[in-house]
Image (tube, rainbow, N blue to C red; front, side, top):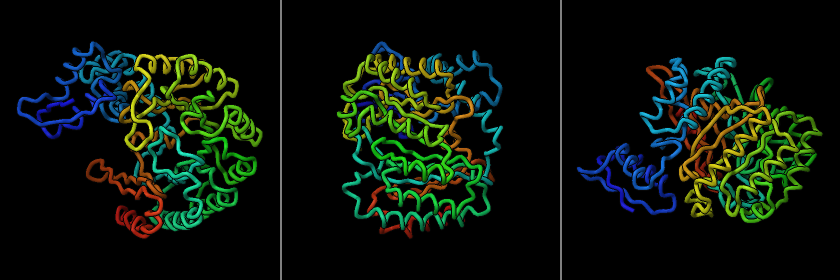
Amino acid sequence: MIITTDSQKNTYSSYHIAKAFFPNEEIETQIKEDGEDPRSLYLRLRKETGRDLPWGMLTGVRPTKLAMEKVKEQMPLEEFEKWFYENRFVSKEKADLAYEIAAKEEKLIKRTGIIGEDSFSLYVNIPFCPTICTYCSFPSGAIADYADVMEEYLTCLFSELAAVSVICEKKKLTSIYIGGGTPTTLTPQQLERLLSEIRNHFHTDGVEFTLEAGRPDTITREKLLIAKESGISRISINPQSMQQKTLDVIGRRHSPQQIEEAYALAREEGFDNINMDLIMGLPGEDLKDVEDTLIKIRKMRPDSLTVHSLSIKRTSQIFSQTTDAQTVEQMLERAVAFARSEGMEPYYLYRQKGIAGNFENTGWALPGKECLYNILIMEEIQSILAVGAGASTKRLQLEGGLQIKRSHNVSNIKEYLTRIDEMIRRKQELFS
């Protein structure tokens, strides 16, 4: 499919608007004098297909940023719904969701006073997993392929942590997020050393401290005890689905029963803020599968739930969307109804390229169980110091107007090991 656009600056938006209508098509963009701007392209494709996209012509990953501006201006919800549709063709349902989340975020940000250049959050990437999920596009490696370099990786990571602690020694730490990958792929001894290294370099008392436990086949009582004793205040145990057939298809070599056992173990060890991730639109799943998954999740009663729409990325093993948009929408509706019935409220939202049905990923949480780091990374109101392969550091500067400058670590794990001095130097230059 060839899309003609009127200028180079509109190429990106036009491509992703077309991709949202036709997710499985190969799309090429060309620039011509009589080409269309994104708005006229959206209107034409809407007419051709006979359908509206839930997020209209929005192509960015942070739609709540627009809502946040209007919430700060105290624009009433009804007026915002009208403005969002007239400007971006966003549906009433999605406008309401964006507005609700923006209002929630503003309240949390004001309460904690976390905005500005004097504070920062820390992200630590552990890019190893038991196996690689077929939908995954993160720079992660299967443990079988990288077992021989894990110790070297930790040595480099500790050097980077030490350097970051010097860079930010005059800033206040707000939150720490250890993600990946699956951080609990580390052995108990390695996990203990990692957490000890973080505590040695940073003041972690009273700081939100999240560990992505992720896969239940990596969770043991010993690791949970180490995490608890090290000050971890929030963990994620991520089923994605509670259907064995789906877990087999997407390459997760564990059972739904193992998820339930890992969750019960975490509760036994005193964790009172547990998140779970679910993905809508996974291969082979229908509405009944999602409803059954939600029934099983309800028995565990997590404190927060992140509901994802499947995103098809070039770097993943899934190459096309097999679940139609209408079914994905129904799945999301069931998940939303479930979260609200459990007393959860939406508190952050983001979108990805190639997302199923042009929908979104939304974080839901019981009041007081929200993850501040998730809000900070989406709203870009604080510097994020990120260490590890594939980690992306952002520096927030307010002098002379808001600026966000970035430094990206190389994604290739073995290349990270040989270029660690360069990764450190980049951060030092960014904050010099």
